Image (cartoon, rainbow, N blue to C red; front, top):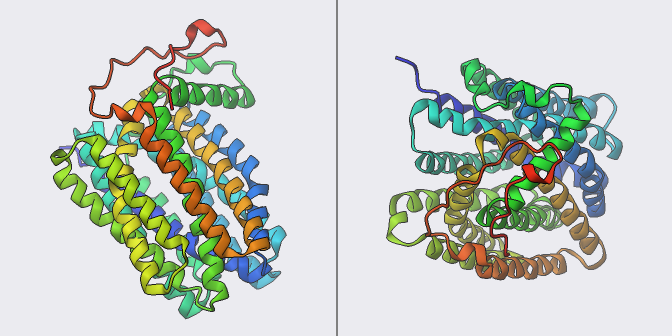
Amino acid sequence: MTRSLAPRFLLSGALSLLGNSVAGVALPLVLLATTGDALAAGTLALICAVPQMLIGIAGGAALDRFNRRDISILSDLVSAVSVALIPVVDMVWGLNFGWFIVLGLMGAVGDIPGMTARDALLPAVVERDGRDLQRFMGLSQSLDSLTTIVGPALAALFIGAVGGVPSLWFTATLSMLAALVTCTLPHSVGAEGLRDAAHSEGRGAVASAFHALRTGVRVLFRTDGILTASTLLSFGIVMVMGSFQGLVLPVHFTENGHPELLGYVLSAMSFGLLASSLGYAAVAPKLSRRAWYVLSLVGMAAGVAVLGTLPDFPFMLAGAVLLGVSAGPASALLGFFMFDRIPEESRGSALGTQNSLMLVAAPVAVFATSAVVSVFGEGVAALALVGCWIAVSLWAAATKSMRTLDEEKPAPATAPESTGSASTQPQPGDTSC
């Protein structure tokens, strides 16, 4: 009897995410400690944005042509090396802004294709094991939430004990372990759903990347209204939450002399997300998808409003828990829609395009926030982010596509590979947003 793939797949993802959770807390604090300038953090994100997007698009193209398991392994190894070089450089030459750019771009080579490769592998693992996709998404979401509870808390302990830079050795080790666990998955599972090589024959790397971008944009924005709205809402979440987590809160805690508290706030948020993910999986049929969606948006807006006031630490923890609890149903729904509605043969291109576009949107938001922080302070920037999130929530609740979440999924339109002719593209779905 064939051994189940799901436990090894989930373990690999958990190890990688745990390392990223530690790095997500440590790196902004290390950068602020090195440069002493909030605008530098935003500038770094903006400088890396375009190369990261190109890497993500090229990675998406590769994932529809080459074995996704192998790309995941290679990506984790590159990530491990790029993170391990930060403490090495600090010991030998000393970190500066230029080193952050170089190592940040190197890390992007590993992180972005690796994240997309793992996403693209998930449906194949589910199908190979004969599991239900929606239930597996709930399990995966719960494990991710548990991991992101432990990660920031571990980061806080390491930063308090040994400092921000040495804590990155833990991240590098976890990425290496993730690659080793992925090696135990059969090679064949990474080849499921790949395009016929004939479709890509004679196409160079640049042409393949452009084709992947065009395919990804078509799938995400022209084939399904719910998929389009889910993608746009994900952009809003990444931009607002990324600015809070990557800039406003690190600046706030650093200026107050307690940078380690950032990890506990992020762990509280993840704890709330875990609790609500488990609760949603248990009682989801009690309410309609639309009801869960609206309740989630309202609760998230309330949680962001609490965080945006930058209150005393106990109230900030409460706001983080409220935000996490409220985000669970929306997170599960958005994840399900992405995997359920993207065609298998275009999954690498679509997910690669989505991740790449998010990698541009997030740095732009962080840079704009850093400019506001530098001129007006983190308090004004936090309130501005609250206003942005309220606007995103109102749009997400009112958009036409998301009013019909409980209707049956329509029969999928054929989505042949684009050859540059308009006739090969599917008819646009309902994209009224």
